[in-house]
Length: 475
Figure 1 (tube, helix red, strand yellow):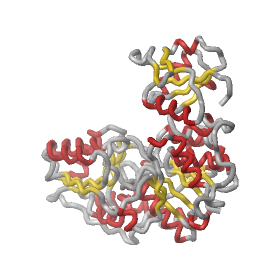
Figure 2 (cartoon, one colour):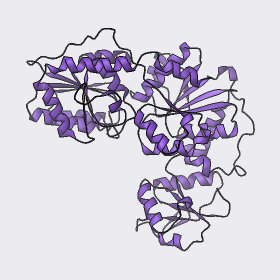
Figure 3 (spheres, one colour):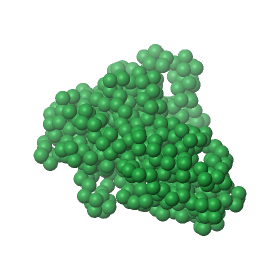
Figure 4 (cartoon, helix red, strand yellow):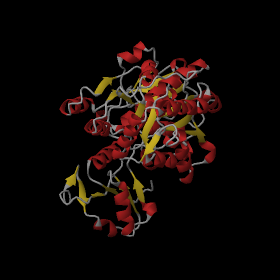
C-alpha cells in the first residue's frame, strides 16, 4: 500500500465496518466511506464519514478504493464507468486480501524470528486447514482420509479446527484447536496462527479455504520463505477462490485442482502452469461389480449424501424434487445423509409436505457406512449450484448408483450424459424429475447404466492415485 494515498472504502455495511476495525488494529487510517444506500449517506461510522460516490471524482488521482461489500462486480463496473482506473480499485472481499495490501510492515509488530513457544518435536509436518469445522462434507472427508494416508507413507499430520468434537477424539485424529473467535480481533487471530504455523523448521500447510489459515500461511511464507511450503486446494468452482490464488500466487508453492474445468480456468486467469497439479480422488471399488436394483413393483431408491445446506448444495431443491415426484405418483424412497444448518427446516418441510413415507432423513452417516448407503440406491442426485469435483458423486458411481446431477465443475469428468448417468442444467429441477421418471419407467436400464458408472470410476481412480501425487509434492 502506498503511503500518502487517499484511502476509500466502498461499502459501509458489515464488511466495511469489519475492515475498518481491522485497519485500526494495525494502525491504519481511512479517509471516508462511499455507499449507494441513501440511508447511510451523511452518517458517520466509528467517526468516519459516509459520502456519495460522486465524492470520489472530486479526489486527486492519488487514491485507492477498496470494495468492501458483497456486490463487488456491480461496484467494480460502476467505478470503471465513472472513469476510475482499474489499478486504483482493490477488492476487499476476502481475508487473503490483507497480505498484499494491508500489512505496512513498518507499523505492525511482526515476529522477527520463528517463535519457540511450542517444541518443534511436537509439531506435525503437514497441517490441514479444517477451520470450518469437522462436518460431513467432501473437504472434511478428503482431509481426514489424506491425513491418514500421509501417515502411512511416513509424515506426521494434524487437522487444524476451530473446536474439538468427541467424535474426532474417538477416531484418533490428531487435532490442533485454534481460536477463531472474531471478537478477539482479526489481527490477533492472525498473530496467534502465525506463531502456531511457524513452530517447525519445515512444514507443509494445506489450505482448504480462503480464510484466516490461508492468509496467515501466505504471511508466514512471506516472512519465512525457506521454512514452509504453502499448498492450496481449490475444492469449489467459485470465482473468489481463483481470485485469491491469482493474487497470492507468489506465496503458493502448489495449487491442487480436482477437475479439468478448474485447471483450464486457473490457467486462463494467469496462474503459473508449473504450480498447478491435478489431484485425483482415491476411490475404493469392488473387484467385481455387485449391485441389486429395484424392480418395477418396488419403490425406486434415490440417495443424497452431503451437507444439509442451501448455499451451494440447494438441499431445499431436493425437497421440492420429492414433492414433484410424489405429484406424479412415482413410487420412490429418497434417503438424505448429512448434517448442516438446514436440518431443522428440512425435517419441518418433510412433515409439512406429508413426505414422511417417501423421504428419510438419516442425519450423520459415518464414512465407513457410505458404501453400504450407495449400494442400496438406484440413483444418486445432486442439485448443487457449484462444486469442485463431487466426492459423493464418485463414491455413488463406484457403488453402482446412477448419477442425475447438475452441470457443475467435475460433473463431466465422470458422467457421460445418457450413458452412465444424466447431467441437467443448474436449476433445471423439472428436467431432473423427468430423468428420474424415465429410469422409473425403464428399470431394465438400471443395471447397464450402473455398471458403466462403476466401470468409469474403477478405470479413472484407485486407492493409490493420490499417493503418487503427494510423494511428488512433499519433498
